[in-house]
Amino acid sequence: MRHVIKLCWAAALSLAAMAPAARADDYQLSHNQRISCSRGLAPGKLNTATCKSYTYLFNTKTSEYFRCQVSLALTRDNKEVINVQTDGGCTKKPRIFETDGKYDFDATETEPPNTNSFFGPGGYSVWAADVTAQKVRGCIIISSGLGSDISKCLDMTFQ
Image (cartoon, rainbow, N blue to C red; front, side, top):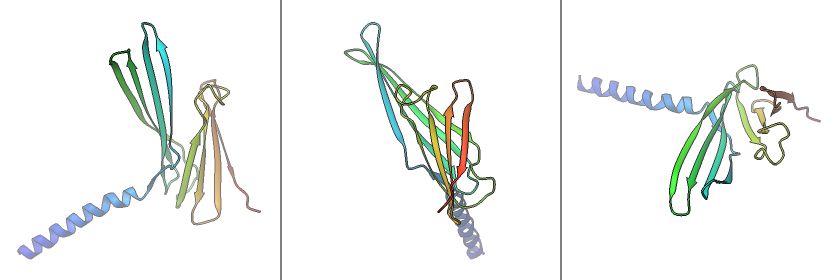
């Protein structure tokens, strides 16, 4: 009886260990993270530095993805740190391909708003490929400055 109980426990533990690994295999973190920081002067000789970083988490089966961002704002005077604030989270974005498959993914963003963005906070590009076929889709998403983003995707042709 003890052998049966030990065997059941071993089977349960191995299934529990395999379940998270199977789920983890469905997601890929983009390899193109960036960080940007800005500094500002406030009244009373206060200095504020704000840094933001982003990445994308991609479901390699469904082609849905999440845009994740983290930010940190630090305020100090000449002698001490007065305030540190952090914020962040992930926002779900639509599928790139309509059907489930086996996909690879990467993304990149424009620089901070005062450099090369025309209508606001800029935009980003997303590339996804079906790794079981010769199929690549490129998407560009930009802020229209009027409330909603504009997103267009194009299937690549191979010559």
